[in-house]
Length: 429
Image (cartoon, rainbow, N blue to C red; front, side, top):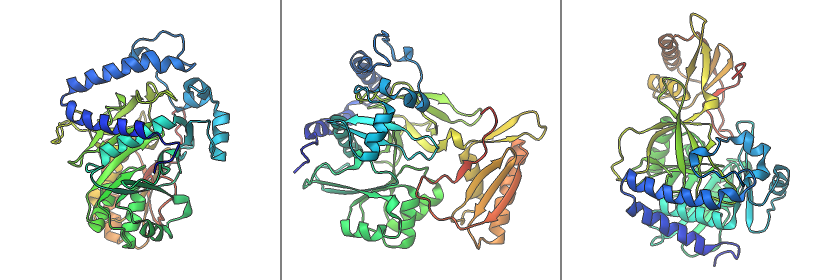
């Protein structure tokens, strides 16, 4: 039996549409034609229904201004059909309530700036149908018991009902790590969705639920974590790239991440010069309760230059690298400019030098100083290898960096794990 507030027809419609599109869209031309039709309808009906875009007469997506989180939160009532202010939205969120027929949620705020969102009950059901179609290839011919482990509860993950085919349960990380294995054992999930730090904790505890499907989400997935997790669970680790702003990408049956271009349009802006990375500007044409149009994300992606063997025309992603906030910047040796170093460059340098390293943290603490934290008891040879690799990297890039390497306990954080971060705000950045 489904919950009376759950729109089963909307969920089934989204599920069937996603599966149909997986068969129908065989080329970029097919995808672009489909997007053009959906975006045209969205621009003519959903977008003008909110006050920020009303009566402005924009006919093309490119005519709309680029927005971001600061603009959205400063004018929250202008972007949702309810005219719900940010103040009223936060009040609903804190009280666990919502306007009739809607859900209110928020991001974890690890960047220091929490985002608020409102979705309709119908959109929530459509999201679930889309997710099921993308991540559970044998559903509904196979039952699914899904455990979602995240540091922030959200309306998206609440159980839609007690169906015989699908059970969905949310596990709140704020309840702590220690009791998590026992709670999972009691639930007996066959599908597990969690941040890499949680999956690794479960793997290292060796108290593992027997699962058929495993997905990483909410954090950057490092190769060092993937190896441990897959080795202990004995299951290939998929990825779900999702944020407050919507469903961004999922792993295909061949294990590659694909942008969710069947529900969202992506403009891909160049990242830091010479990095080969891109930063997405998204337009979610599947949502109308709150408009996300030409919304600039703070993320950095490395795209694949080759098509995926699965045959999907959806753009393949090699890696979700991190956020623009985590791009470090140091003075050049000659002192006339600053050198940007993206998180993946630092991570790869450390991991290539010390492949047996279990964990680490890198933090820029001043305009020219980097602190690297290694676990207590790290072997001297490993420490030296990390030091030499980073010094060689800085020399190759022409960056002047004061490197400090320390040993410290590195417990898994409740909030998002960021192995490379910046605690120093460059003036004017």
